[in-house]
Amino acid sequence: MTQTFYLLRNQAVPDIDRIEVYEANQGYQALRKALKEYEPKALVEMVKASGLRGRGGAGFPTGMKWSFLPDDGRPRYLVVNSDEAEPGTFKDRELIEKNPHLLIEGMIISSYATGAREAYIYCRGEFLFGSEQLKRAVAEAYQRGYLGENILDSGFSLDIKVYRGAGAYICGEESALLESLEGKRGNPRLKPPFPAVAGLYGMPTVVNNVETICNLPPLVENGPEWYRSMGTEKSPGLKIMSVSGHVNRPGNYEIPLATPLRALIEEYAGGVKGGRQVKAVIPGGSSVPVMTKDQLDTPLDYESILAAGSMLGSGGCIVIDDQTCMVAVSARLLKFYREESCGKCTPCREGTFWMTDVLERMEAGEGTPHDLDLIRDMADNIAGKCFCPLGDAALGVVVSAMKYFPDEFEAHVTEHTCPMGARLYDTVNH
Amino acid sequence: MKPEWELWAQEAKAEFPKANSALLPLLHRIQSQEHYLSEDTIRDVAVLLKLPVPYVESVASFYSLYYKNPVGKRIIHVCMGLSCALNGSDELMHHLEGKLGIQEGQTTPDGEVSLLEAECLAACNLAPVAQVNLRFVGPVTEDTADQLLTGEVKS
Ligand SMILES: Cc1cc2nc3c(=O)[nH]c(=O)nc-3n(C[C@H](O)[C@H](O)[C@H](O)COP(=O)(O)O)c2cc1C
Ligand code: SF4
Ligand code: FES
Image 1 (cartoon, each protein chain N blue to C red):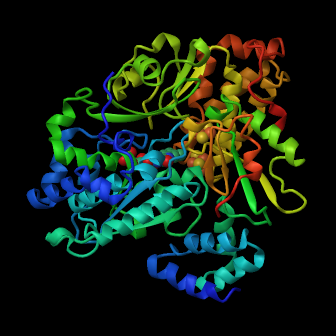
Image 2 (cartoon, rainbow over the protein chains, first blue to last red):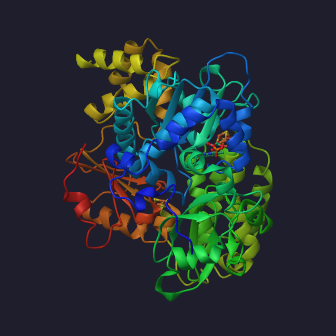
Image 3 (cartoon, rainbow over the protein chains, first blue to last red):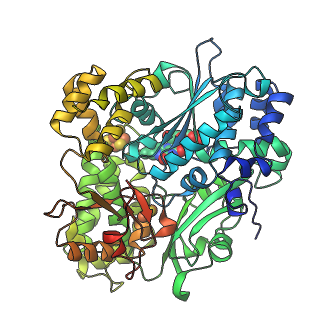
């Protein structure tokens, strides 16, 4: 088990959210180095060479995303996605609450690299403390000359603004986020054009996740070879995994990519609670298919998890023990997507509604064998037919759970009872 | 309309001058004073930002943290997300419902406490977790559940 603290520095250094502590621990040194020793283009090349991939869920190569910005003289924006709401994921919240200067330093480096003069942090509305921490840290950074005009005498200027959302998971989707940041309802936009071409206020915009941007200071400090010394060829570097559910030590763990899932659960997170066994793991946030106890030796990198039928996603790893009902798990997650569907398109809005209804009725012992076909049929009618990825995301767990645990689903509709002998929650509450 | 709202609107516009970006920050600030956004408040905000009333209404109604109806001084959000459910969130909700004599989604008759469901609050390490006026409390145990009702609240 390798425990490093490049991103989660706060776990090793108390009070690093305060600027004087951050500075005393090499804080803002990477920024000095970037401004002094690198041209913006060289930084983009460094990010490309490092192989850093977006940590918001899709794993898109960050350097490549940055190089999509058209060189047409229009103002550019950097927007940091701090709307973290994918069930099971809680890494960005720790970063902004406990180590906000790392994000700010990363944003200044990223803005310098991409040519942005204005940057925004879109902070989830529920993160009241997180947004206060960010605002305080931004003000401190202005006071010390890391923000504003002519930063550290480099000739580079940048303003950062903190913007609070108001409760809507869909605003984590980058185009919905930009709508919300423009003071509108958070409905996703039609793509293309992608934000790189027409983003915030119609201008070229880079949208990156909090964790992605937090990689910049250690990357500039230590170089791309260091980054590539961890993980695999296609999935290099560090990832924060949020581990929750039935584990002894739920929390965020910074791991080298390709660490086995078993090590994450047993060594980092202290194993399954009560000495019970793993039944299923949702490795990358609630939008990805489940993995089973037979797949625990899978390395946690984008390719290996994909080959195992799931996705690394946001790194929100939910561990489910062997006494838990997978119909209940599926029902609970479908309810989330029903609540959070923005309602713009029919397959998602109606599909998540009816699927939740059927799953809750099954869990309550009121389902019929026909309901299983109904779920498959609804899944077919949602898959690939929605305006944004939320519709498909709703299917990941239920479809895979039906594949891996067919007996549990069968028993609910034939015996009208839960074979686990327990109901996770009472479904009449819907 | 409260006299200070005019200044708040100017400040929001100064910070976020483009498109309608001042709207969400202004709604937040006014709601933190008023506790909810009445029809009159929505109309005032529309006037302050020179926006159509139906536009402001439609934006405000999209977001779950803008309240269209009066809410309690103490708003308790209990996370019902999967990780919290695996750690007893439903029992916690039932316990609070029993203590308060209301159902989730409701406010006590004296107008003091609102009990609301939340989706995953990105604090699954604290499961089961709740927020009191958006301040995290967790993990909430059987022994500490009642502190959600009585503990000190910051606004
Ligand atoms: C429904 C939905 C919700 C999303 N929520 C988030 C989120 O909370 N945080 C995030 O960084 N990305 C989220 N994303 C991904 C963003 O659209 C976008 O890809 C990401 O912010 C890009 O940053 P990255 O390249 O650094 O990962 C979401 C996507 C979808 C479809
Ligand atoms: S798929 Fe769902 S969330 Fe996405 S646009 Fe359609 S209704 Fe909205
Ligand atoms: S499920 Fe409750 S905080 Fe994530």
